Length: 423
Ligand SMILES: Cc1cc2nc3c(=O)[nH]c(=O)nc-3n(C[C@H](O)[C@H](O)[C@H](O)COP(=O)(O)OP(=O)(O)OC[C@H]3O[C@@H](n4cnc5c(N)ncnc54)[C@H](O)[C@@H]3O)c2cc1C
Image 1: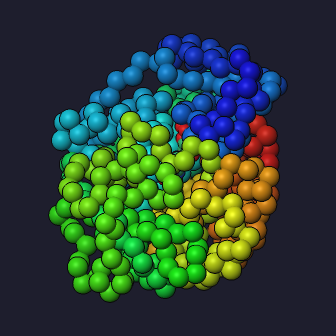
Image 2: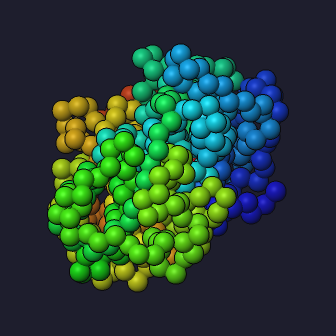
């Protein structure tokens, strides 16, 4: 194999081989044979934009598609057991058939569960913590080839869920489930910048889309649980008007790919993502960057980003702002000790760029400098430039490094990405 690329083709993996173990013992054997000079890294559905999944030119990517894949619902414990490589969209369909749901989904259902969880992937909603926060247990083959299961409450659990493949290759996860629910999505236009924070609390899941043009944000996507609709008066207060045509958040893209709008109720998994499973999400030829910062700094951070409009607009397709509840997973981008700046949650500033790598890196560096005063943490799976600063943004980073030593003492999951982070 050569020149395998990620989903958006902005990154070519340097690893020259892909292993496809068919059993867990084959996977354990593969890990035992690996060394720090011939490392491994798990590969999910390739929807990251940087080298987080790449073990390097002497390494091997590990794809789990050929492992047995069964989805098992345990109604009593309210968890679903899923194979690591399955897409969230497929898990959702299996759950819905039996009257169950996940609390939230990312903007796209096309991503693997393990890959999404490993990078702290999030959806939206000030009451919704990220997808990793709903992991109840995970089973992985560690760097010695041993099969390890960690459950919520175990000493190492909070450090092991968001680990971007650095502790082992996850083969199975248990996710919390809730009874199925219906959601209605409505898109509004014309919301002023000053109302963004208020808008984010309007309903179960809300996304603000903007190209930072001076007048107002471009679109407000409101996904309300049918049982808790957004109050008419609150919508009016925002000065928002409902969209009259089906919308895509990126100008010029076909709205057929986006989930149903105009307030039509439907199952959670067909409304919470922005994109339908059977269509290509987003633009395709793109690069993404995203920074999460404490919710309490949102107004100042919006001003800081708007001050860069002139530099970033020529490269930008669209930005998205979302609220995410705090959690206790050590390397989660919404991690909070409970009494720090992050205690009332995070807000994510996302940028979908044209696929121009060097220019995107320059723009990202500008944003990183502008958002640094707020303690902004980059999304683990998107482009960011200042890796040296990242460990200092996580109070438990050293404790995480100790877990790396414990579960990967031979360094078989190390890579250029981890070395930039200091391990
Ligand atoms: C169009 C688009 C929209 C997006 N929307 C969102 C969004 O709404 N919210 C958000 O937060 N992000 C979003 N992302 C980013 C994406 O969800 C994350 O980057 C996620 O990690 C992708 O999962 P993957 O399986 O495709 O990743 P991969 O690139 O395949 O892997 C990501 C990481 O997970 C590790 N990994 C994968 N499988 C395993 C395993 N079995 N065991 C251990 N480690 C493993 C890999 O080694 C790597 O470090 C979006 C990306 C795209 C392309």
